[in-house]
Amino acid sequence: EQELRSTKEYLQTTIEELETSNEELKSTNEELQSSNEELQSTNEELETSKEELQSVNEELTTVNTELQQKIDELSKTSSDLNNLLASTQIGTIFLDTNLNIQRFTPAVTKFVNLIQSDVGRPLAHIVSNLRYEHLVNDAHEVLKDLMPRQHDVQTKEGRWYTMRILPYRTIENVIDGVVITFFEITELKKAQQDSERAFRSAEFTRKSYRSILDLVKSLIVCMDRDGKITFINDFGLKFFGFKDKDIIGKPIIGNIIPEQEFPDGDVQSVFSEIAKNLGQPLKTQYEVTRGDGARVSLAWINTAILDDDETISGVMGIGDQVEG
Figure 1 (tube, rainbow, N blue to C red):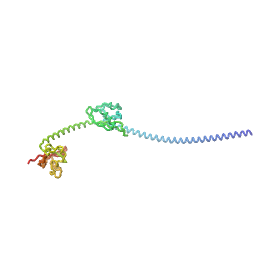
Figure 2 (figure 1 turned 30 degrees about the vertical axis):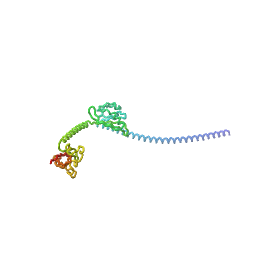
Figure 3 (figure 1 turned 180 degrees about the horizontal axis):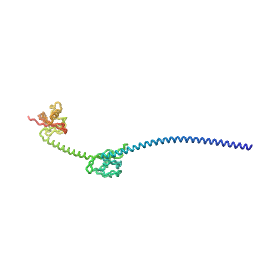
Figure 4 (figure 1 turned 90 degrees about the vertical axis):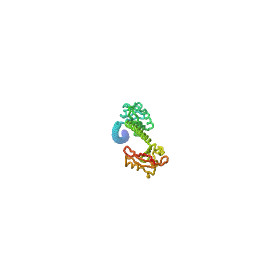
């Protein structure tokens, strides 16, 4: 009976331990199941992350391809721009905000002593062959007020250039330095000087002709196609009692020739008659009033004033008082 009781107690203890073990195993199983679910969830997240990484990698590949295309385009554009600047023979210097040299074109080396190793050096340290000493100051002023500057400058060899200094603006409209361009105008300057000499010569000739006409003892009046007085000699001024500044630009009708001589107030009939017989003087006679108030008769000869293309630009009239 004692052994049976002892065995029964042992069995009871074993059953309790087994139940405890079963509960622990059950708990462990639940934990393992939970861990398995977490691992499965983690695996799904990793799979999702893998897909996202793959998508990002594809996007990066696409962006990298586009970036490479942009780099190729930028390289080609830069080459095209360099070739364009070199082919136009326009000297150009690019400066940063500290007026240090960033780039320059080959054409500018003809009159500014620049080599490739000068990139990064201040403009003030560079020697030029220009007869102009305010280049650096002008660049400073352009940076300060952002107003372009333009001057005609000459080299020591006698070549002429139009120099323009402008602010350098980035695509974002940020001022990032200064651009100086030199456009050769030597031939234009020469032509301008020749033109000025020709003008002075023509002006001298015109003044000489006017001096000669002022010596003529006949009334000489010139008018344009609108019938306005463009010239009257000294004899004519004294004859009518005018001052030169008072009569120039005024209509000839009503100031020199009475209105009744042209009832319609139009002098185009004179031009028409002259055009019909170009090269032949048009003779007529007008009753006019002298400066002293006397009514006199003038024998009038009209001749055409021709432009270079043989068109009539005006009329010159010569009048002499008819005696009796």
